[in-house]
Image (cartoon, rainbow, N blue to C red; front, side, top):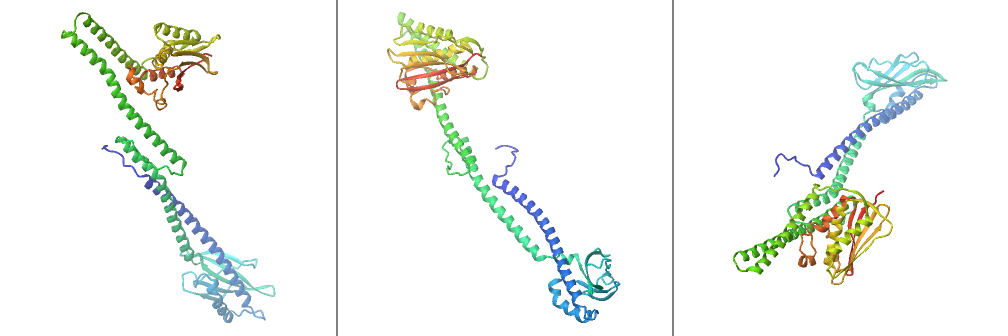
Amino acid sequence: MRINEKQRVPLLRYWTRRYVLTLCIGLAIIAILSVLWIRQTTLENRLDLTRFFAAEVADRIVNEQGGMQYRETLPRIIKERERFLLSSEHSIIQILDRSGTIVFQKPAFEMSGKNELVPIVPSNNEETVQKVKLGNRETLYVVLSPIEYNDEVIGWVSIAQSKKDLTKVNYEYGLLTVLLLSLALLGWGVIYLFSKKLAGPIQDVAAAAKQIREGNYEVDLAEDIAEKEIYELVDSFKEMAGRLQQLEGLRTELLAGVTHELKTPVASISGLIQAVKEGIVTEEEAEEFLEISLKEAERLQKMVADLLDFNSFASGAVEVNVEKLNMNQLVAEITHQWKLVHEESSFQVNSTVPESTFTAYGDAMRIQQIMINLLNNSKHAVKENGEIEVQLYELDEQFIGIDVRDNGIGIPKVEQNLIFERFYRGEDKKHCVRGLGLGLPYSKMLAKAQSGDLYLKQSSSSGTIFTLLIPKHK
């Protein structure tokens, strides 16, 4: 168990919390703006209703003689309209004469400053709304409507109401609260379900990763995933798990193979020398045993050298010296030298080199290593009187190609994707050819180091073609 490991938050909780927080902040801003908008529109609407009420009072309290019958008419109008038009019972209705003197007042309650409220009569004799601040910091809105007779102003109707009463909208606030809470719950539910749906496959992948860490590569992940990115993640992970399982099995098999290949010559040398030491064989037979022991020792030494070379190159300890090369001359020399070594063999070796000169940019010694390894592989693949052909050609504007072709038994299709794996040896080679399975991986690394490549072009029961690419010299 790791010490002081930072506690991780589950993906579902992480995104749900942050979304809910963001949602609440957004809804709070919407609520504030909505409250301000509701208050303002309510204030404007109720002031409009108050103007209408004041205009009706001003029209109905004038008698035919031009007098104001407010004592008889006003209470009846108030009773008919007040509960519909006024924001509350906390209103002050005043009747003013032409000079602005209060001749009638209907206060609904006693409040400091309100009884002394005297509106300012406008000079233009038009309807107006005045905003008055009292000593107790309360704000009143006063609506003044002129009382006219024969197009002449004979008085004023004043209706004063507090801002608090005009903007009081408990019902709308209740609806807004219910709406925002419903949106919050709905939003939380939606993000919870979406996060759970997205987190599910990721949690499955995390569980599968733990399973692989414990050495079990048999992972079972759902494939019916609609989201493209999640599907690609799951599919890639399943492919990776299968690849790891394949490589793990290959590693175990190859380790056993390498151990066997190194152990066999050691056991052979030990047995042969032991026989000579104990006098079981003498004279010419003893010399033959010693000669066989030396050959086994040389083979063991070569395998160890191959391991060291491969590891040195893989770690970057070996450099590649690239230079301008005459590929026609180089390929012809390598093929000729290899033919001389195998003159007594029953197979034929042919090379096809064009008349036009091809120049490339590479390391001659490393190219020779690659070609000799390919030719040796072809030698093991061909039967008696088989054919091996080396062909040099221009692939495209960037690369020179070298094909090494044989008419041997070919590489089984199931093994073709594995031949460049380290220590991999095909089923046929395990029984008839000794080695560590480093030839092709090492050759491919050498080709890559020269900015080229080595790959299997084709293979079937009628033969195999390997292609070596070397960059052209420009």
